[in-house]
Image (cartoon, rainbow, N blue to C red; front, side):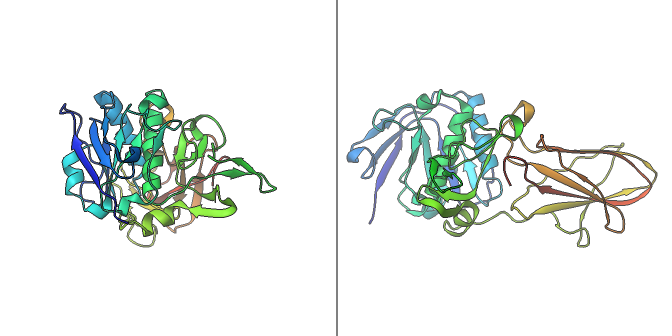
Length: 337
C-alpha cells in the first residue's frame, strides 16, 4: 500500500532552530509553526489546516530538550528545523505536528501510525497541546510517545499477579524525583520516564522490548559509545585543574558503563557529583538514575555510591595519593529496574 501526504507550511514566524544530533540521518521533526496536511490516512482524506502550537521559545526549547533526552542513546536527530527534516532520507524521518487543531480527532492527546517512520511518504503524527493543558512536560511526553509509535512501538500496559489487565496505559509507580513510568504507557505524571521492556495490551506475556525494536526496525541503532566500559581498557583520564574537573557523557544501553581514571599526586578529598541531564529543579525531566563505583589502582572496588531516593550519585571521601578509577552506569531503584 502506498500512502501519500502533501505537507505545506501555513505560517512563517521565527522559532528556535534546534538539533540534538545534526550528524544523524534519522530525524524526528517537532513541528510547532503550523502545517497544512492533505493525506489519505488522516481526516478521511480531507485537508487539515493545522494552527501553530502557540508555544513560545522557552516552551518549545523545553519540549525539544525533553524529547532529545528521551532519544539521546540513539543515532537520531531531534530537530525543530524543517530544513534539516527535509534533507533527511524519506524512509528515516517523521514529522510530529504540535497543534491545537484537534477537533477532527477526539479523545486523545496525540495520534500517529505505528511504524510510519519508515513508510517514506511523510505521513505525520500529531500532538494536541490544548488537550494537554498546554504543558511543555505533557506535550514532550506525548511527542515521544507518538513518535515512539512511528518507530514501531505499541502501548505498554500493567497487569496483576493473576495476569488481569490493570491499566491499558501503564501509569507507573512512585512519586517525586524517582517516580517512574514507561513512555509508551501514561508518563504524563511521573518524573523518570523512558523506554521499557514490558507487556502490551495484547496480554501479560506479550512483552515488548522497546530498545530492540527501535534499534533494529528503523534504519538506525545506538550512538557510538563515548567512553571505555573497562578500567583495564583505555579508561578516559580526567584532568584536574585548580582542584576541579567536569566531564560529560551518554549512557547508551542498559549495560553501558563510562570509566574514568584519576591520578592524585597528594592525598586529599574527592567530591564528585554525577548529575543526569535535566530541564529544571529537582532533576526535572531526567531519564537516568546513576550509580558510581570507586576503584583503587589495583582495580579493586573501594566504594559504591547509589542513592535510593535520588537520581544523581555523590562521592565525598578522602583518598591517599595514587591512581583511582570511577565507573558510572545506569541503575535501578524501588520503582524500576
